[in-house]
Amino acid sequence: MITSGQNPKIKRIRALLAARQDRAREKVYIIEGVRLVEEAVKAGVKPELVLFSSDLSPRGRDMLENFAAAGTQVEEVEATILQSLSDTETSQGILAVLPQPPAVLPPAWDLMLILDRIRDPGNMGTILRSAAASGVQVFVLTPASTDIFGPKVVRAGMGAHLHIPILTLDWPEIISACKHDRTPPAAILVADSSGGSPCWRTNLRQPLALVIGSEADGPQQAALDAADGLVHIPMPGKAESLNAAIAASILLYETVRQRNA
Image 1 (cartoon, one colour):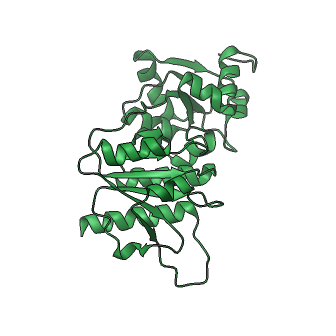
Image 2 (cartoon, one colour):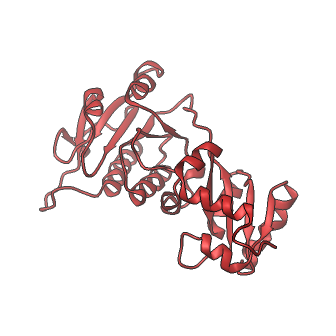
């Protein structure tokens, strides 16, 4: 059992939770809680390391023998130490280090979601969750976006990281993926609070790359230059704009509605 906060494994976990550059260098991220670890098992993702404490439920303990049999490092940790690593108020008694999924563009896709400099971790994770639920095949971030593998994003994503390819691309690479590397080309539509056509009257059935811009700054000029059109969500009330995660979810489910009509 690990009983010291100075144990090398504990110090490594702290560094991975705290530093984007450490996660990027090792190409791993951290999940915690029984439900997320179960999701990883169902998705066929093998953890590199699993830490657990005496607080772990019988449901969680059922997974431990399978991890050990599959060659995953499994270590018991003093409960107070595991709690100190937790990103939640009360630890569920289990934490795992997972490999980041390969950043590979699928050979066939017809719905890409692009987050252009989204910096709020809660919004990022919520949008990723909606993207996975609505059938997005490619999730793209532009540089200067928050770290998709940060603890708050992972918690908000609720396992969505396990089910959708995630890439970081700049605008020339996005244009190439949508226009040159795909037949037929995909339309790039940028969400705007008031510009362009209403989403209900926009063709979202076509091969599509949907762009959601920063709440503070909106889409950058490169996104607008690349766009085939703008799309907005009609707001008959008095709100000036919608939260980015809410807007993305509405647009994604309008896409689902149109494609299943």
